[in-house]
Amino acid sequence: MEQQITSVDAGWWVVSHEQQLWLPQGDLPHGNAGELGLVGSSGSVIGEWQGENVWLICANRSENMGSVRQILDQDVGLFQLAGRGVQLAEFYRSHRWCGYCGHEMHLSKTEFACLCNHCRQRYYPQIAPCIIVAIRRGEEILLAQHARHRNSIYTVLAGFVEVGETLEQAVAREVMEESSIRVKNVRYVTSQPWPFPHSLMMAFMAEYDGGELQHDGKELIDAGWYRYDDLPLLPPPGTVARRLIEDTVALCRAAAD
Image (tube, rainbow, N blue to C red; front, side):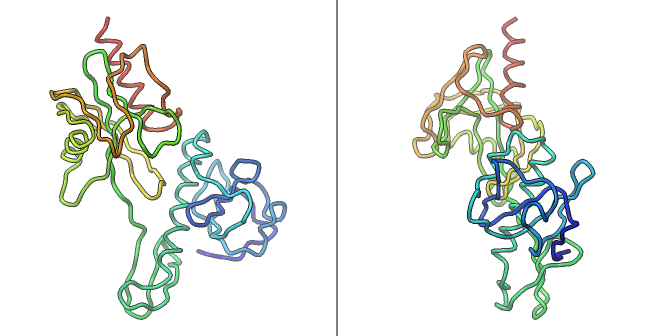
């Protein structure tokens, strides 16, 4: 429920606008609203972390706005709450008006939703399911450099699930489209909320089943098979991609023994 922030309010603060996050001193602000200059803003509690409220304020602070990627090294729970805030802020910004009748909407007092008093439509934040998969071939793992990455990181393959598709079908299709290979023994591992901008990553491991590796030149800059003890620059710890790689490397090492 949205309320006016007072000087006694305190906790963790997710101040977000257009998928950006306010990061004074390069970190998620924590403390008293008065000390942070947030008194008088409109905000709502979106969760709790270590016994303290996590607040969302939909506003642009002009300075020190950055990507939620900058706090990937935070504890997983706090990073996920910050991601929730960024996604909710963008959802509220993009749902000011009803898509059915065009009337102005308001926020629900009981759940994360936007309501239209005119036609009674109720809108919820939409989550885009996507798969991410690590592929093993004996003592090697398939790693790729994605075109959307601005560094030299090599990671596993990923892609969005299409309408009418199972997760396993999405794995097979994305792998074929991006690398021209077939996989088998697809196994679910874990999931991770991924606020870039509003995804839920569902992680899998799979084994190589045939085909000649040819990477997609649009999505990938490079791709190759890497022996477990000779890996390129990897995604940071805390990401589901890094977990998949580490789990697969353990299997590769076991296969080599």
